[in-house]
Image 1 (cartoon, rainbow, N blue to C red):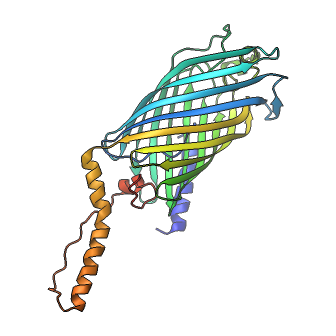
Image 2 (image 1 turned 90 degrees about the vertical axis):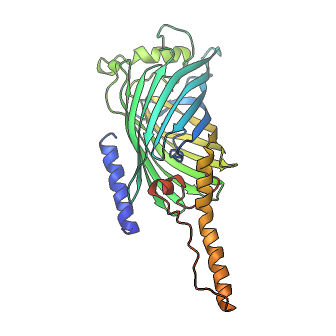
Image 3 (image 1 turned 30 degrees about the horizontal axis):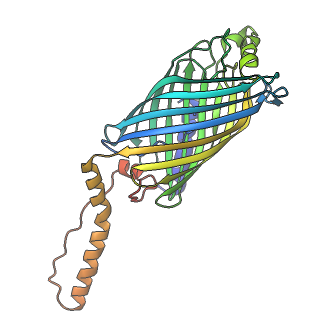
Length: 358
């Protein structure tokens, strides 16, 4: 299959995923290592002084009003084999708003418990990673309350799929899914397209454009009761539509850098900026995260042998060449170690080349 044919196949598959309804740290999923435990902590800081209205126009918040939120996710993942991953975690957020009277509201709470499952499906031209995510809030939004909002406060179920296509040191990837939200909220179609560039064995860079669209109506949209939500956000969130809005749509762009200090420890950081939207907040997000991997000794040893095999074979060939030149060759060729990578191993090498830091 030619490179052009592979590219056409990937584009077709992504279009199909998008059309069939098949989040800001949304980069391509981590490598699937059998027996691995992965612990991660991710933080996003979002600040805003403007919204996108229902027509997509940017509208500044009233004088002195602002909103910011620091969201955190603490997760643990278990990779049962080279194709399956299970994860669970909790969320924590701290939000601050300022109203037109310069009155500040702050609120810091554990927001939710969440879990997901991913499965790697290795095809000849690209890789698919279907996933299901569920989120349960610890507290729903009280329309009569006086606390600044820290999250949506609704149960969500999201199903979708990643698609990854290798182009040498660059990987093209995408995601599309369907997100069902409780409490009468609109259902969402999350999507993104990105490029992952493995600059060195330790450094990787991602660039993404993505977002979400409402594909059903909020319960208050049908009866033209949007004010029932905006009256809450105007009161406690400084007018920001970051959460609790009717039929939100959003498009943003993100860049992210990852540094693998070792095969066990990774640091990542990035920036995201909203580009367009409707009934949602406009602003910038700063992202920081760390991840710790714990692999079984048997897997570490197996990968070390596989990665060393080409080097040992090259050394053997060089020695045999020298013996032939000196007339000392006995005609016997030492067998080379056979560690042909599987399709799963190719994905798990991330750039489809051996990398001890992945």
